[in-house]
Length: 149
Image (cartoon, rainbow, N blue to C red):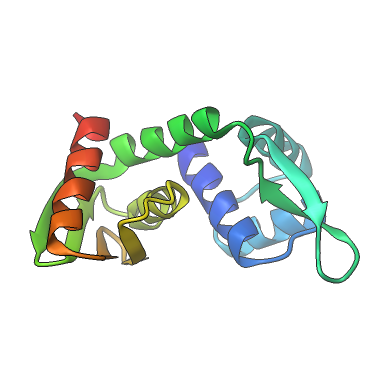
């Protein structure tokens, strides 16, 4: 549950300008995660989130860019925990996940910021990734294989 919640937090802070722990808790509760402010505080510390200046003059949460290896390890763990299989159709990569994990795994793939991946979309247990080329699709499959095996 914690891995799913962490993936959802990353997804939420990338999508919304979240300025407070209470605001983040409200978003998480809307998404079906029953959390308290104390849980959110621990998650922020675990994920090493930081506050950055936002357009409105305030500050909002963002993923810390300096400690990439620690964050990449979290993303790799989400990918390993949710991964079932993958297949390609030209430059489209289809990743099958454990039921209910597609969004978390998709957020992890997006957070890896692999240059070959143009974008991705998730359902309940399936992710479709648009990849730049057929050769790049093979490269991404190789990267994923090295992480999950």
